[in-house]
Amino acid sequence: MNRKESAVTAGPTDVIEPDELGAVVEGVLARVPDPFALRRFPREVLTGLGEAGVLRRRWDPAAGPAGDMEYAVAMGDALSTRAPAGIAIGVSLHTETVLSLLHRFAGANEYLVKLREDALDGRKVGAIAASEPTGGSDLSAVTTLARPTSSGWVISGAKKYVSLGAVADFAVVLCRLATADGSPTDRHATVVVPLDRAVRVREHDKLGTHALDTVAVEFREVEVGAEALLGRRGLGVLNLNYGLSFERLAIAAQVAGGCAAAIALAVEHAERRVQFGKRLRDHQYLSFRLAELSAEVEVLRCAVNDIARQVMTRPLDRELISRIAAVKLCAARAGERVISEAMQTFGGPGYLTNETPFGQFWNDIRVSRIGAGTDEMMLAIISDTLRGAPEMYDRLIRITQ
Image (cartoon, rainbow, N blue to C red; front, top):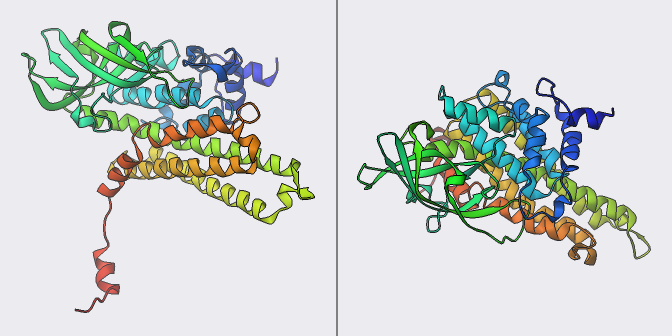
């Protein structure tokens, strides 16, 4: 049995190390016929990662409450350089957002603990249902209601952007708490709802990330038990933002890995392509441009790895959440520019979808400025933690009247 085969067939007791993740991802993708032609997320990817023990290794309790975030970064890199962007993002939605919430808030709740264990093994797939048709990024404005009953909750409302929603078993739904008579309050909660009790209204036709289904979902008086409440009632938006921080860092890691792959393709093309009597690589401007892109991505990767270590060693407080937002913001914006410049190295073939993957790269990268919080939301988080330096100001600034 070769190295790849042994990694893919590893049992739950085997440990897949970061340098083995590439082989595992390749083996799992081999189960999926033509992954780049998919229009829905393939559940067998999460099943394969679960069977290989990768998801449990990511959430190794010995690494702390946040699990092994450096391992998560390595996963993002392995996925972004081998899998379609939709698959990479779908894995991070389940592994980072959903599982972070289940690890943080399940407590001793037997129902939620069982759900978490199934999700760790890839037997159950989870999604996040937060954004609504009229609310967008304003999560505090959600109108989906959770009305209390004697045995639990009744969920009513609509969510517009539920990624993994066509294939997931359950969703963590951000709701506005209601009174027993159905009157909305100003408090929120996160509630786990089985998606077979919801109505999948339609699947969206998106610009990119086609291997990740995104659907509109309606909850029509869906009854769930009291055990479906995830985290403390009244703190739903804070609960969700906790999980989104993990997804944001995973997005930054995937963008960095994808950009590095794009640059490597551009460098190889510059080595092979001859124009005006010499290789593109021998034209100083082109060589320097690729060097600049490489330097930018190297800095981004260092920032992602540094933040990953911080997530493992300190509380996820407002300052760290702001740093994650900053890395995600810079990664998303840099990603567009790097993909564009790498595409430019190919000239006309870069624009031809049957000759290079750059058209798909271009379409896919755009979602990084929207998913898990738009650029504007990241700026709002960052600006909320900006602090001046009064002592230094008094010492150095002398503004005359």
